[in-house]
Image (cartoon, rainbow, N blue to C red; front, side, top):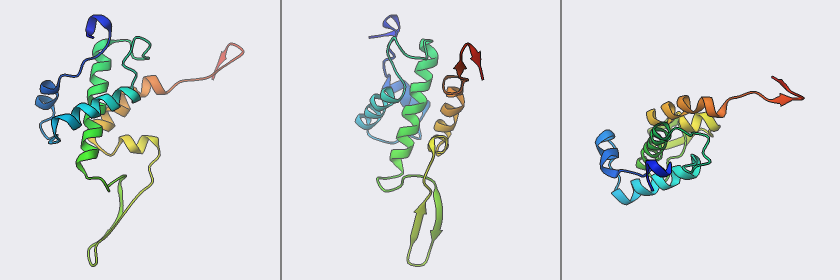
Length: 128
């Protein structure tokens, strides 16, 4: 599937060139792209109809997921406190926007997606 089918295909080499700080094995990066497509619809019914825009959002989500994975399996959330003697670290519980703001890619993604997530409600033809 391709641009003609309105389905973004993952280009691993292009991704690695744009994000050289991502040092995960190729299979993990590709898996993160697959996971990103569960979070951002990559089909014809996607709210993001523009192919190039969706490709960028999926790329940023893949970067965000990869950066989080690089922290290790135990680190989830932002560090709330740390102790040096007898080593102690605690993590803050994250609400939706805070999950995205843990990485630069995630923060940019969150900003770019606002036009799709924010909006008003309609009641009897009136918006609010």
